[in-house]
Amino acid sequence: MTPAPRPLSPHLQIYKPQLTSVLSITHRATGMALGLGTILLLWWLIAAATSDHAFALAQAFWYSWIGRLLLLGWSYALFYHLCNGIRHLAWDAGYGFTIKATYRSGWIMVSSSLALTLIAWIAGYLVRGI
Amino acid sequence: MSTDDRLRSPLGRALGLGSAKEGVTHWWAQRVTAVALVPLSLWFVASVVALAGADRAAILAWLHAPLAAILMVLLLLALLYHWALGLQVVIEDYIHAEWVKISALMLNQFVAIALAIAGIFAVLRIAFGS
Image: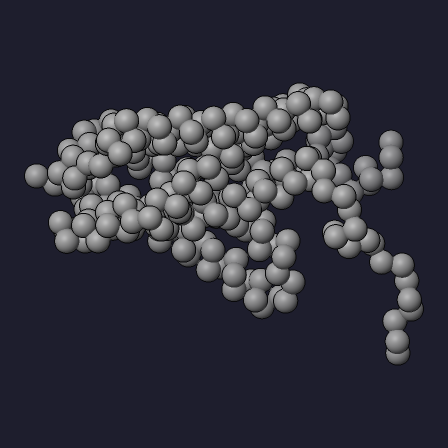
C-alpha cells in the first residue's frame, strides 16, 4: 500500500535564518562541542595526576597550534553556552519573552560571549607572555 | 469538574496539582546543574588563565589546596551530570532507530559516569598526593 500523499511540514532549509533560531541551534552545537572538550580536559587533568611524561604529552598538544585553535573554539563555546544559558534561565523565570527583548538579549549574549573570550585570552597571554 | 478528574485521587483533586512525580526531574536537574556551573566554570577559566604556561608542579600545587580540589570535584560532578542530561535530549531528538537509541542512551550514561569518576579520582590523587 502506498502512503497517501499527505502534506509534509516544510524542511528546515526553506526558513530564512533568524537570530533567534540560529542562536538556539548554536546553543546545542556549542553544548556538544563542549562535551568533546570535556574529554580533552579530563585527559589533561588525568595526565597531570599520572606522570611528568604523560603531562608533557598533554601540554605539548595544548600548546601546539592545533591545540590552541581547539582551545580558542572551545573557550568561545564555553562562554557562548554560559551566556546563552543565563538567557535561558531568565526565560525559565518568566522574563524577556517579547520579540524585542529576545533580540536584545540575543545581541547582548553574542557580544558578551565574544568579549569574555577576548578578555580570557588577553589575560592568558599576559600571564604567560606571548 | 473536568472529565480528567475521574482519573485523579481525591487528594490530588483537592490540591489541584499535577502528578508531581518525575515529570520535571530532568528539566529541573538541568537547571540546577546549569546554575551551579555558572560560578564553577568561571572559577575554572580564571584558574586556568592564571596557570597559563605553568609546569606540572604548579598544576599539582594548585589542586593540592583543599578549596581548589573541592571546587574541581564539584565542577566535575555538575559538568558531567549536565553533560549526560544534555546529550540525552540530543540523542532522543535525532536518533530514531529504537535499539540504536537505547544503546546510545545507555552509553551516554556509562561514559558520563566513567569520566566523572576518572576525573574525580585524578583530582583526589593530586590533592592527597605528597
